[in-house]
Image 1 (tube, one colour):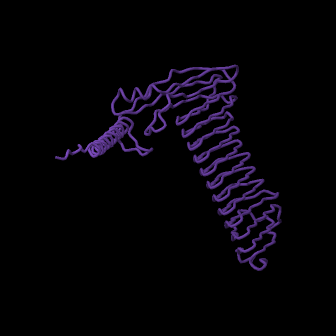
Image 2: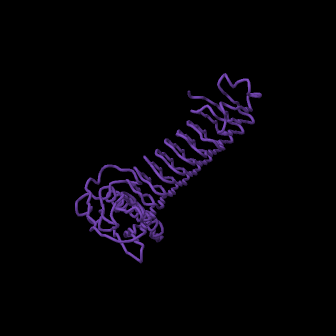
Image 3: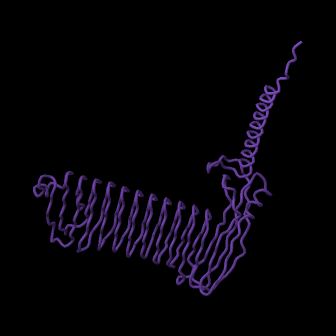
Length: 356
């Protein structure tokens, strides 16, 4: 009579297979539970608001006053509002904001934010700190909303990640830097420097001098400026108002300038189109592209024109058509001359129009 060995190897394989399946199911259920927790407690997934976390908590930051000549603010996704003030003190106020599925969850999220204000000498340092999230976390994060009243003689430096900066009727001069956060201003003056990576810049009724640098953020500007220097990679630039000096350069962004009298104009683009509408004072003005088209509309009769394109075409009013050589070169004087306008492109077209 033969003895039969028990199928131990087969049993182990079956047990291992069942164990792996149970572990997989447990991981899936854990992932679903984690996903539901994030969804209901924080309200967004991968930055997309799914309108679930409907409760937010706003915790006021005690008002603090400082006598300083400079303010430096650092944060991440926070909001900073700079207000012009006529007094001698810098006034700090604001609130911490948190979000969750219930009041206690939202309050707990807001409590993660810590606003540290420290005066060292004549400089006020404000740092927005938060408890670090796990690197795999996602959703709507808490933030601080800071309001600063700035006297005219106080300089400032604000540096954020994705947070937004707003300036309201400020006269103080300073620098604003963000990665993806927007920068807005209404009625701001002084000397202002703005740097963003992808954050849009929108300034209305701007005064003073302005220097902007952005990679892909768009710049929209209205006001009366002493000096404007703007540089982008792919961001579009739109300027309406008046600028004593305007120097704008972009690689592939479009440039639109509609101004009153400009004393010095320099517009430079690679593949982006350039549109200029305005009046130019006596002096030298330059507009050039590589492949972008150039459209110029002049509001005054006294200009010296020097247009050229390598492979594009030049289009002018009928009165100047006879002075265009092979549709690629134009040298002409309108009125008494004085404002010297040089427009050149490698492959782009150049169009001239005159407003009377």
